[in-house]
Image (cartoon, rainbow, N blue to C red):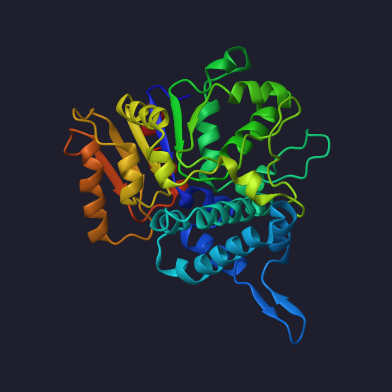
Length: 340
């Protein structure tokens, strides 16, 4: 149980601990998926034929299909110099076809990554549990261990007290993990775990693949088979940066969450300026304490990031950022600090 209001701000590096692609890897996946080549001489097609067939099947109009395929070509050739697919969409925000195709690709790549993730379990009766041994060295397990400490079955409703999550990822790995992991710990049903999970404040600034489907709620199965999906339709819950900054109610909720927190924990976050802008810089910064991973960043860049994060705190020593820690190792370093 956490005793002070703590917000976990999650980036792609956090999901990478259970085998999700980070931003650059996702960009490569999307580029390859959209690298269409038609060899009329040999009658061969290179690229993801299922994606093209989905466009043809669901759009029907040949001219519209061709405009989407042209957008796919632009994305495939141009994405390499961008920090992420989100950045590329923002560059071409006036081109609705690029936005449409990019979102559809994001959906396809992430739903397939969910299926390949370390926490996925094939669920026929919806009672299967995650093999926790596969993720024993990840922050997911350590986060859950921190949550359940001191929370018995009688006061289970308090488990998410003082916890909020702002996830910049499209995947639902944290929600799915908690849904599955809490069931064996407290010997509760999936419905009971889902009801419990509904009390957790979790915000996805850029949306997700959709709500998780459970026994009693509609939605999209975690790691669902994408073979015959309408990727354009299924990507409707994914938002671009431009769409996000126009969503005033969500921005307000994000910034209020940051402002009212005692602690902010950045996990696998890349510190892109547009994402820091979404978090906001309050006119009267709070005395929030910040703990952050910066794996892969140089010492020089860490100094710059530290300065940017200080816009969220009035304490000169209120930012603890480490470029030698993974997300899991941050939990080891601050095990008692985070829960105190």
